[in-house]
Structure formats: structure tokens, C-alpha cells
Length: 153
Image 1: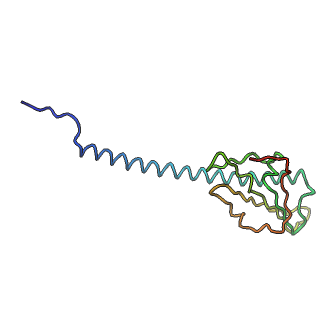
Image 2 (image 1 turned 135 degrees about the vertical axis):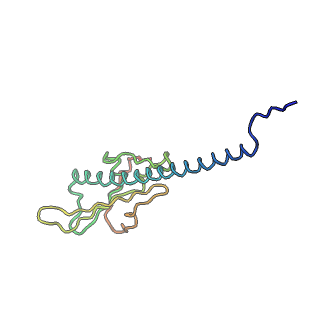
Image 3 (image 1 turned 90 degrees about the horizontal axis):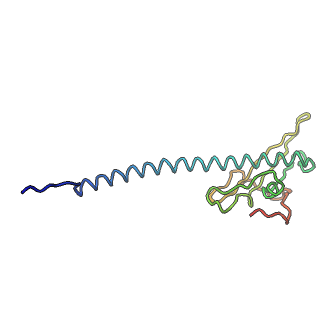
């Protein structure tokens, strides 16, 4: 009598599981790298959006431009409420925004001839991320905040 052995041995099944585990680990590492890059690109885009928004705000509100050698802080809440930036949805938690604690620092340096020398720095604060510009002290700098009637979150 002949026994017909069809199927895989336990060793063969274990080898296949180990190979699949290695492939899954490599795929996860590759995908997480791209997700991290996408998140960083999102943060950079948000920072640029804040800088563009405060530039447009100051074009419309020229009386708010600081004098030579002075600085100004403009809250992103204010820019959002007045339509200069969109809702900055936190990439780590889509139920939150980065609008509430973020702000832009506007510094007017020495003017040259008829041009104003203005620097813009965006301080973006999201869960798990904070821009390098947030390390600058803003104590004692005039700050433009949103009206109490504006609701961001």
C-alpha cells in the first residue's frame, strides 16, 4: 500500500511565514519613510502658507507693518478668521488643527532706498511638530490676535 503525501511540511510553512514577515517589514519601513516625508512636506507647506497669509494681510493692512527695527507677531487664528489662510489640519490628528498656537513673526529691518526689508518667520505648532522659528522669544512684541467672535476649532 502506498501513502500519497500531498501538502507542505511544517518546516516549509515556517520558512514561507518567515520570508513573508521579512517582506512585510521591508514594505512597512519603505512606506513609513514616505509617510514621514509627506508629513514633513505638509509642515513646510503650512509654514509657507502662514508666511504668504501674513504677507497678504500686511498688503491689505499697511498700517500694521512694524516700523524699522521692530517686530510684530500675527496669530494664525487671526489670519484664518479673516480668510488669509485655510484650516491647517494636523497631519498627526485630523480632528485637530495647527491654527490655535501657531503664529507669524514679522521683522522689519533697515529699509534700503524705497524698498522695505521685511523678514517673515512662521512658527507652526502641531501635535508632534514645532517649527524652528518657535524658539525665538516673542515676549514684549506687539501681537495681533483674532477677535473673540472668531471660532477656529
